[in-house]
Length: 190
Image: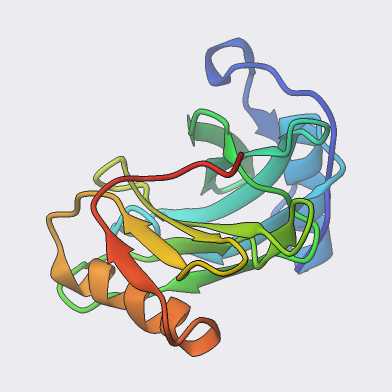
């Protein structure tokens, strides 16, 4: 994982960057940092659109103070890097998070999985945000776990058209929070 950070322009305001062919991962990361005007983030190579185009996904902090991140799809064509997609800002931080490329049965392209891990808010209360990003279908799947003292942990999962994605969230949260209860309404900590 490589870490990047800074401000960025909208995809429509950015011109593609011409580079020499990539000979190393470090070269790619430096070019992505330049394209996104960021020096704090994580870059992962993959086939995120399910085609023959080479792609990278970059997760960057867009607002560290408010703990907001965005996911970016970067297309690599010969010597040109171009930002194709940028998600709106989501709750999360790159500090102590888990980000990985994911393959789900029945989906013919790579996905990005993000999990904030736990960060505590006050006296033993906390929440965990998790996202699965499908750049090809331009869908974001969301799970949010809330933990408060003397209450069962509650897990909300956004609507999904793929039960494997729902199962993935449940299985991952079950490892760290075996007694959580599923809920149909998202909650916010007070």
